[in-house]
Length: 468
Image 1 (cartoon, one colour):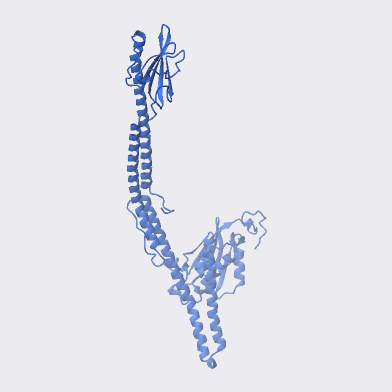
Image 2: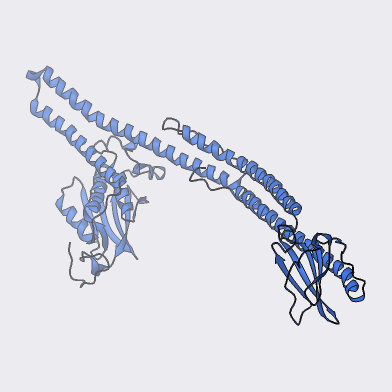
């Protein structure tokens, strides 16, 4: 049975019912044996009482013959007050007394099991001693009957064992048949999973109609296969797109170099070198973005520190030169607990994207709402249609309408920006705006007083100190 298989409710119920029935059968058999033992003991006592009723009047009233009829007991013996055997059943005639015990002063009857009593063959018998009072003292009447076991007779024991074995075998066969039926869909699921490979991820395991829990298991396996197939297709598409984006600049550079080698005297080498360097820079940008995505996919740890988001954005904007006008609206008391390099990468990617699509101006804002820090980068370009606002965050996605203006991009910048935001527990979305595209990143905000504490947002230092 597979390690991941948990028997269905019906299978567990069947097994439980079978075990309960087997225990019930054993219990009933034990009760039957106890009943048979008690009944046999009652029968033995009845035989002893009958022998007592028959012999005692002969002792008291006479005449007492020396040889007694055996009746339904094993043996009878009468001993007088002098300890002499005065009467016995035929097998004890002429033999010494079978027992020497008798009841105590307060009792008339005493019982012992002797193995064997004197004068009888090997084996254990139950000997009952009765006091019979006579004028010369008390006499003792010994009556021997076979020992009654707790289960009664051997016939009763064999009958109980036979019935228990028969019922247990029937229940076991029923449980085995039901469990075999329950395992059939599990074996079908296992066989199908064993045949599924990367080339046929479209296959699904059969979903049984019966056994609800196995049905849920099969549906869960199929859902997992759906996600696996989607992830594999996404990986194939990503590999194809990456290969295409890497091949294009390589092909262009190869053509330029081959043309230069064919016509070295007619080649403008500085111009050709500059063109090749453009292709190299594009290759370098794509490879860098691919490495960044690989680290993000591997969940590489973030080097988080309390950071003043407004100051971080202001410093980054001050380092760069832009082709368009940059409008700043930076609130200075907004702090986040983040990896400065990663958040800077988000800002750079958003600025690069905005510059490629802006008409004349890009607006960068830092603000806050309650416990959320907000970074917005908006341009005054053509904007992005609502139906395309999620698509642009897919890897290697560049919309056809803006492909010409976006020729310098790798198609990975926005995907990287969103994954960095999500790695910080935030979001990156495109919001409505009067004109152009408006990218909004939301991050958890930390207390301003901890913005310089290397221990994190729980640090307690004066508000005036800042590490960044």
